[in-house]
Image 1: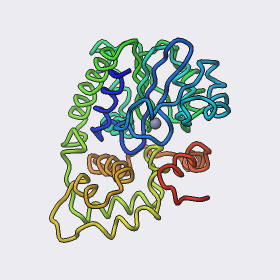
Image 2 (image 1 turned 60 degrees about the horizontal axis):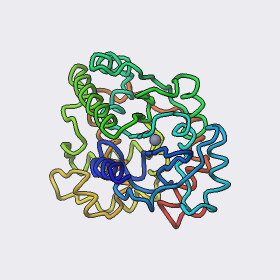
Image 3 (image 1 turned 90 degrees about the vertical axis):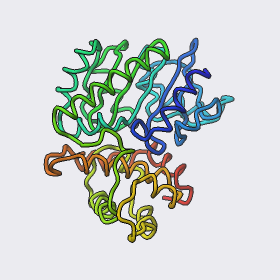
Image 4 (image 1 turned 180 degrees about the vertical axis):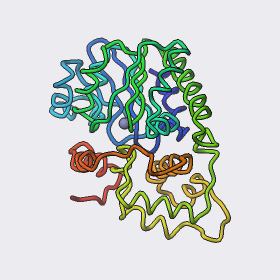
Length: 309
Ligand SMILES: [Zn+2]
């Protein structure tokens, strides 16, 4: 398992792949599936951040896991995406909130990306239309993709990479990165290919926070992580005397890494877009579903221990 942890920690150090407590990974060993525990970060990957569950019927996986998770030696709550991890048959399954893919997806350019991915040799892939994370997403995947699919493109959400080996995961990720970068260039989206490269004026950062507080939702984690209660104290920490700063600067002065990483992804998408009116935002019923979802409430309570409702 050390090879998996090393890969995951490496990915977790790059906010172009995962932000805050987003994303998840699993490995199947014999009749068990070991999956990232809810509320943990990729950068903390270790045996302690895994939940162990029986590999049963995917449809029942979440229910069984929530009944049994505190009875096993791995007393963690499994990621809410356990059902699709159990459905996909590959040994290793990795789910990322891949920034450049999200940029393309939110610009409805997923078909163009599929063309590039097929040219790169990835043939068994599928586009999954947006649905609420958890059981609804699993049902969508079950309808659209076979159990041995290599790559799933989840609209307004992220990607799922599946392989029998860690080197197979790396190979698919490399081709995905190259195809996304090529599409972004072809479509003139984003002058920067990485969140890391973008700097903003403090006024711009405030503008993004305004947008994100006014019910424009691009992808699910925004609804979980960003809320007025968390954002207001951040605003007061933005140093207005600076000409420009990156979200990395802001993270180092605020200490609220999880929130800022998700905010940085949103800002990256906004700043890389020609026109905000062309963005494929989440529908309001999707946002309501996410906010009220029990697993999202749990994640929120893990992230913000003072959150009581
Ligand atoms: Zn996700």
